[in-house]
Image 1 (tube, helix red, strand yellow):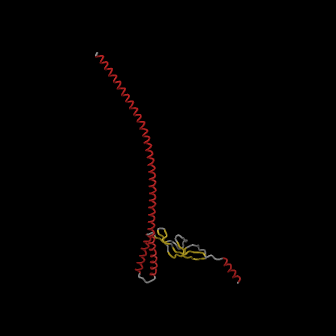
Image 2: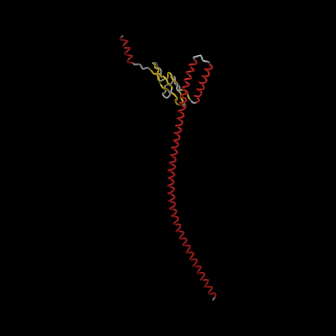
Image 3: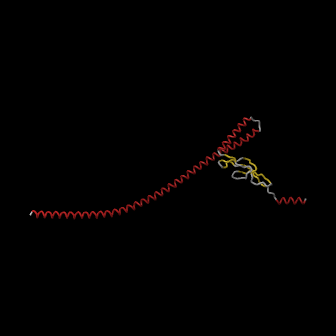
Length: 222
């Protein structure tokens, strides 16, 4: 009797184990279905999120390009402004310097004329030597500032460096537009005209052939 009860108890225990296994299998299948369902939703969500991220990235890329271009143009405008200011300041400095050196050149020429006048009068040699040394110092300073005389006499007239104030007429084979006399010296400053030379240039006399013929004919009649 006890054996039969034990056998029945063993069967019942095995039945319970099978039921537990069936429940576990069912739970596992259910979890797998839920995982698959959750996996499918996550991929869709990631795709949507990825699209939003791409759209945002494209938006910020365009915003960056626009901002960068504006910054680039602003820097270019500022650089042009800076160059213009520097150029204006340089020209202003050169203008002031040119005015100052032009005044010094005029004073030098007055000094030279006064010195030439003194040489024809009875003046102590030590005074003349002192004045000549002053003139040399003026010339050294002008040379240091790159002030040079414009070549004029016996050269071809150049309107960029010379200014005509008169003509020297001739009838021979001399070339025209040759500078025959320099009234006032001209000067260059850094290869730019500080003051043009005032000159006279050669000009050929054109004879009136008809008048010459008439004068010759009148002479023959007489």
